Length: 126
Image 1 (tube, rainbow, N blue to C red):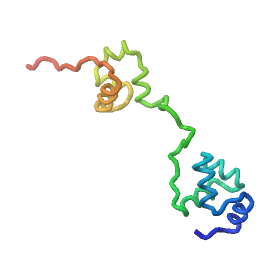
Image 2: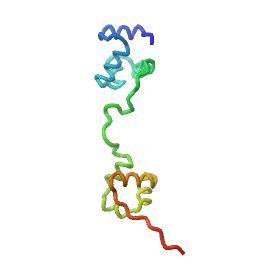
Image 3: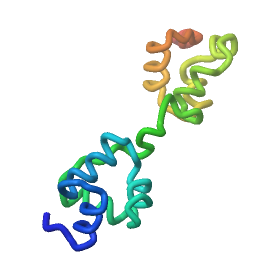
């Protein structure tokens, strides 16, 4: 990647050897977000993202270092935190309908977290 005049100026002012070193230190070592790097350097988020794309540097998933733990509104969290006495009285089909997920997903969550569901039974055959 050919460095622009702006990049050269920033490298000289901040004492880095190259654009890739500067972004690597700010992003991976100091754990700054792309927005924080842009604010620090006086450029936009898109400029930092463009530089990283040009250098083939991987970007953290959205949420970055700020994301931790399960999402409070996810079906998985809601099923796990639902009253165990009430969930034990529901069938897998009823739980799936209540939380708007598939029965397969309810089975997976039940297996992972040892959630007891009411056994699904079929009526007598006629």
